[in-house]
Amino acid sequence: MTAADLSKWTKSWNDNMTTMSRVSDVGYWNKRAEDYDDFIKTSQFEYGREIARILYREDVLRPGATVLEIAGGVGAVTLPLASHASRITTLEPAKKMAGRLKKNAADQGISNIEVKICTLSGYDKGAQPKSVDLTVICHASWQFPNIEKLFQLMDRISRRSCCLCDTVPNILSSHQAMCEKLGIDTGAFDRALCLYNLLCETRRCPGISFFHYRMRRSTASAMSMWTHLVGKYRETTKNDVELIGDHVSAHEADGIYEEPACMAVMWWNPKEALINE
Amino acid sequence: MNSMSLENRWSNRFDAREALYTGESGLNYWEARAGDFSEMRVSKQYEYGKKILAVLEPLLPANAWVLDIGAGPGSLLVPFGPKVKQFTAIEPAVNMVAELRRNAEKAGIENYEVLQVPWQDVDTDRFRSRFDLVMISITLWMFRDIWRQILRMEQVCKGYCCVITGADQDPDGHGPSLWKKITGDIPKPSYTEFPFIFNLLYANGRRPEVRTFSHRAERSVESRIRQQKLFYAKYVNLTPSHEAAIEDFVEKTATNGMVQETYTSAVVWWKPAL
Image (cartoon, rainbow over all chains, first blue to last red; front, side, top):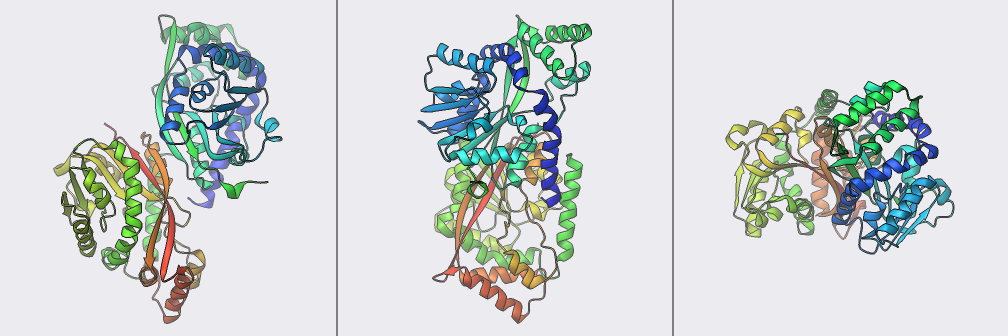
């Protein structure tokens, strides 16, 4: 990799994530809490369980570990990790998401999760360096256009390991085609590929693993997801609702909307040299 | 980022490297390097090969057939031999093969065969879908037509393909200050394969797994000096002053006559496309 390549990945991330982080704000995720909760529960926490399994297999998550999760959402990853960890602190700035997470933990009888309604930057001010064994962020790195800052914060807080997960574009999924049909530019940008190269070029020597899973949710949840997604970019029209209805109908069986998805799981050991104390 | 642009970048880098060579850089270079390379790989009880085995062993079926392209002195043969049914080593350098046989004999390993030819000359039809694991360790940079060679690896594979490559910033261990002292303003060529190989596979629809690991090596000062002189002789006609600079550089890094080295490598593996 040349110096030009290094700046290319960073620039690419900044360019693509600046808009994404602006339109996907806390207000948006409060509106999405209900349909996202439906997705995670209908899918039986599938991707979170697989992430936990990989991290355990790779000795990234050890029994009894302490974990900090950034952007816990409704607990998709939090709850599966909790069965391996001694304690998880999860940061979730969207109150409705955090409320769902607490309820899901209670429903499963899980008591080793502490939910903090705040962002990472809000939490980081009081966080002790090397205060947890593992930091995890899944489906939320787009909140950080300055990605090196996120990496450094994770490095600073983690004693042992850091983990970042994100969705990989899947040619079998109809998601991108549907976005094009709706005329919304959610971007075909491959976050996982960019993140992996950014970790490599900053000499973090990350491991990576991929897995396929099914995104399953009720048809009502799918309608809500697509409607809110359009709403991030413009007013939803009657035509949009019809298009979404047709799309959901075409991908549902027995009231469950299903789409294939692929996840990348990346992990690395905290890089001491980059810590800005 | 598409495959064609990556392949072009790879071949351009290959050409740039070749254009810099003024001394022996081909097979004869590796004939001369066999002794010191073997010493490095055998050191620390085959730590390099054993750590690779630790990553890949879960992928091996019972009675596995394994192919190693650019097998060198048996860096992988010795750790893998006891775990597989048959190990095929492709290695064109006579002296490397001699080192491999010597190391295998010392380890009591007999379940192997050597094809003493360059990988590019191997008839892949003869071995189509034969191997459970096809490995290539720190050798890909020698191929200009990288994607063609990867597809040939896939042709002979029925399980997993694997590239093992340095993941250090200075993967060849030649300090930038010594490079400048000996070669002047010649830009240091890149031998780095990682994460380039990941990106190339990804661009072609593979989803490669990657594990990185650090490993140590130990060799005598004499061996390290010999290796460094051979390396720099690829680029310049070494003068007594160059040789003195190399000796001084190596001796400063030694303790009790031995040089300790630590590297980071990446194991990249994937299921071939159907």
